Length: 116
Image: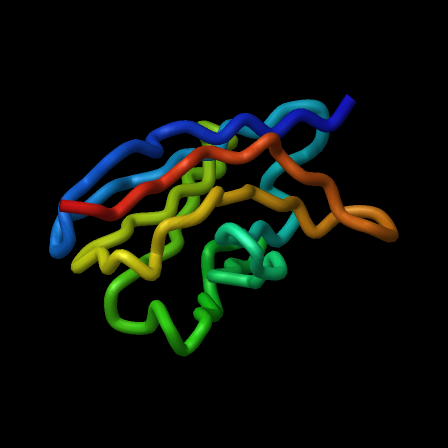
């Protein structure tokens, strides 16, 4: 019943920006930490950013620090990933994950392609 639906992906030029959204339902969103992962072709899925239930203590992968910002709006049951200064190496499928249960819950992902 937990549902996570990502949106906002697309094709952007290097140096451009995108904002990803993850709409959550089926659980008490405000009680759980949320995270973003990404998986590039031929690579393992990696943690990009994490945020606590109240929106504090954001944590980022070294590769995106200073460029990406995770945030959430608990009134809208939505977590965001603002991505600035995008690089070709940011190209990946981006997944939303709720830190809930033994294994967490995942969305289906949204494709981000950074290319000229």
